[in-house]
Length: 327
View 1: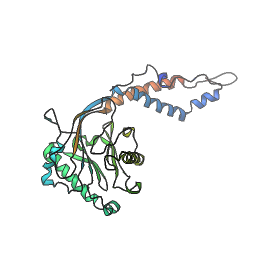
View 2: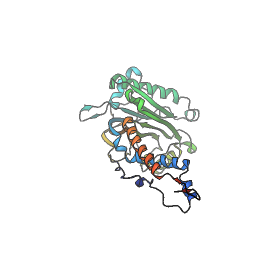
View 3: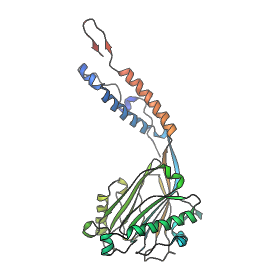
View 4: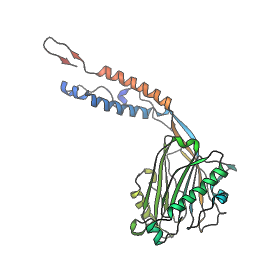
C-alpha cells in the first residue's frame, strides 16, 4: 500500500497566503472567521490524507465467503451442523485457516412459489434457522474465538449472513444492508440481490448475494438483472463495476491492488442436500487500521502549522496620523 509523500509546505495543499487583493475590503472578506475556519478544516483533511502512512497500520486478516443455492431444502439442524464443515472449512496448503470474517450467501431458502414471493412470510423463519446452523458450526467446530453476527439480510429466497470473530466486533462500524427485487414485473423478490456494507477497522467491505435469471443461454437476462440490482441498491460503490454474471454458482470479487489475495476456491461436492453444490472462496486481506494516538499526534502537529500560518497572515491594523491602514 502506497501513500503520497508529505508536502513540503502548506502551499502544496492550497493554503498559501493569498495574492495581493485589489482592495482592503477583499482581504477582510478572505479572512472572515467562517471562511478561514472552512479553509482550515479542508486543509487539515487534505494533510491528514497525505500523511496517512504515519498513523496507519496494516492488519492481515482471513475472509471466507460462500454461496449455496439450497433449492428450498430445510436448514441443517444445529445438532447436525458439522455436516457443513466440508463447505465452511476451506483449506490451503494443508493448513486449516480460521477466518476472521465469514460471509455466507444463500439462494432459494424457500420455494419460489407465488405465495412466498408475494407474501414473503416464510423467509424470516428460514433465515433465522440458517443463521443458527452456520453459527453453531462456526462456534462449535471452527474456532475457540466465538463468532458474532454482524448483520443478516434476506429477500424472499435470498439470504446474506455476515459473521466476525468477537474480538473484531468493536472495530466494525457503518453497517448498512440493502435489498433489490428484480424478478416478476422487474420488482418482485424471486430474483434480485441482497447487499451488506461495513467498515472493518478503517477499510470498507461490501458483500452482495444475488440470484439472477436462470439458464445458460439467458446472458441478456442476467445482465439486465445485474444492472437493475446496481441501480436499486441504496449504497452504490464502484466495487460492483465491470462484473460479468455467469450462468451458475460463482464468487466474484474486486479490490484495490495488493489488498486481497485468493487462497482457495472450490466446491463442497460432499454436500448433496440440493441440486446445486456450495461454492467457497478463502482470501487473505490487508485491512487499514488508523492508530488513534499516532493520528492525534499528527493532527496536533498540523494544527500548530496552521496556527502559525494564520498568525503570520492575519490582517494587521496600523495607526496612521490621518487614517487606519489594513495590511
